[in-house]
Length: 223
Image (cartoon, rainbow, N blue to C red):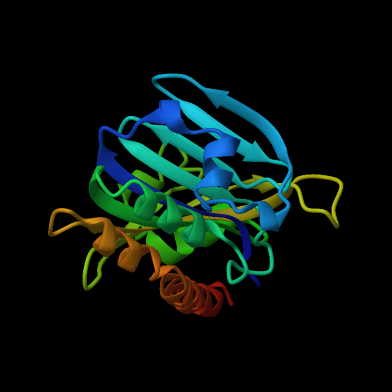
């Protein structure tokens, strides 16, 4: 069972982000998305409450009053070559005056597995009246929270379906959503924000290790 990473994203929380400045020209002129990358813009929208720049390679930059988000769906082989943290860091360094409050490095992963509902119940659920009786329990979702130094990791696991390039029909999967969240401890905080964004590959390694531990335990129980 090999996890497939569907999306890697970075979220920078802050007070009074200004969506009206976000557009492709701004990102290029400030070197946030340099012209040398040769990225072609697919779509753009700039309004006071919300702004987005979407490139044809799928990378999306979004700004709302309390959030900057950079998302990359081109990470099936891993996030090592993604420019998510580079873009987010360059944006923060350009707009140092914003009152940034925290960072989330996020990974959306799926795992192809037969009967994900049964897997989750056998791994995490003790038998009891909640799992039997007149109302049969179909499945469960689980949220695991771990302490980090600094911050915390929240891992949500659910059952679902997904379509893959090598399959025409939807396949049963486990849906895994990992959020590595860290709050700022100082102001101005742009240097701290960039430091936390730089933890992304370290977070990915921890995420993989944790999934491997969980899946090996579940595999042993299912035999």
